[in-house]
Length: 144
Image (cartoon, rainbow, N blue to C red; front, side, top):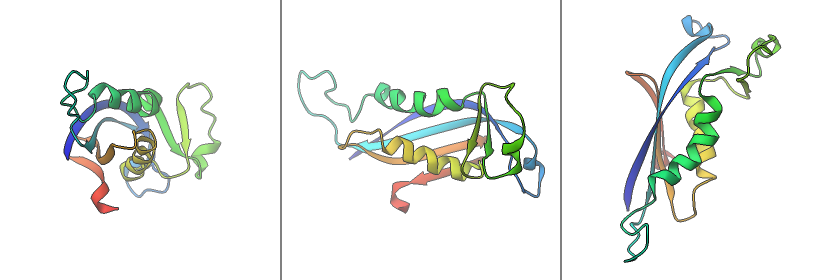
């Protein structure tokens, strides 16, 4: 088995309702997302994808529309909080999630989305989501 990783970037704002620190206020992060998959290397001489586990572009085709394009330059809020009652209709990209929009919950959600889109012979191995250079959450298949 070989693992390959594709990295992505997105800008996203959130607020953590009920939090006891500054993150209770709307604020943004320059998120970085690393998606690691694993599988067997294709060994088919003459095949366009010979020598690859998966084309990096295929990972991009899964992650970009489902996560990056959707959430980049957006505001995400907990749908089960009073934030859901605030009129933010002046903004295009506001998402009310069924959970507190922490890095931990986002990485779980992203893992679920990506796993559902991968070919059956490829496994999602790990996802790392950093909100700063020193703070990140990680989902790893070995922990399931």
